[in-house]
Image (cartoon, rainbow, N blue to C red; front, side, top):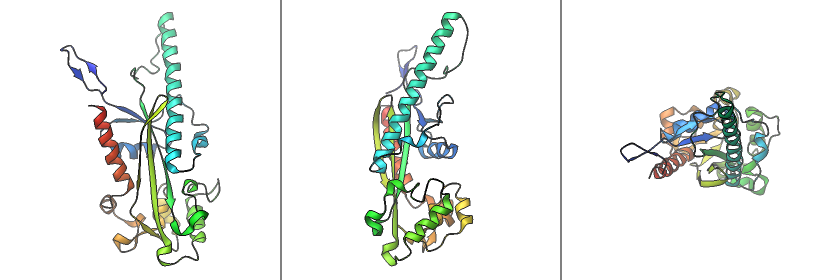
Length: 252
């Protein structure tokens, strides 16, 4: 439980602070919506460099990558907070005031990281979900990735075009991973062509432009209405429910 003692001797719950280990403001906003007020969602502190952000993306599974990222960024956050505490102590000794880190509590915040990958059973060992973002090369954009994927599946038909998605979330505090969750999406089918305009509209998310939804008559995921997406009970919906339950338990 987190909290503080009030003057009446009662313990008052304080908001759980959760830092999203990403330099992408859209992902921070998405996690905030996902948690629906269950925690105070924050971006990485301004004094933490994003240099080497991809260095932690090594692992045999997306679950392992998410855990490694959460732990690495949690250690960076803890180190930055230690520097901030030292700066404030020095300021107190010299009588100079600094507000760096003044809003931080004494307890280390939670740090959340995610990683996901495309599941493509028909490609077998020729496909590695962990490399979904990088399989088309380091400089590929969303359209490049979509076209490269379609090229790999060119000779596949019917159920061999079945695809899925696995997303993993890990939360760390200080020097330890404290919880991990993973979930898979409802199955889809890979389209046979890609509209670059739909990729652009996805604001960095290219896969919905080539993901057909059997439950919606084969319509593209990118073309579904927001309410239709919400009704899919996808991997994000399941992860959000898991995280909210876990965060509620932290308040005791």
